[in-house]
Length: 138
Image (tube, rainbow, N blue to C red; front, top):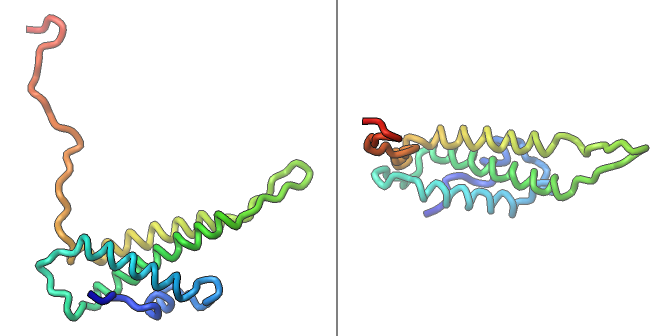
């Protein structure tokens, strides 16, 4: 099944115009990854041929989150600490900002995609057991 989003969708939505910083191959890999994640959770009851615009928007958002995480990873690998007179100077808060943006964007993507997804199974945090007398209780 073809991707719902395109490279242009991701670039336009997130204003990723610099192809040196964000190469086309990175965007394409992120779109493919987002598409695979969506297909795993997509409810088979929905006919997605042709895909609805909402699916394209959701996939665009999810792919954008993947791009931001990739940029954060690169930023983390490239960061250098500078020490002047015993004081450490950080390279900036760009990594934190990219990770936060990715998390918020992914949350929004799953919210947009929710109507098309399989219902999530209920997860019980703990199972209750029968009551048993403890230490001499009757």
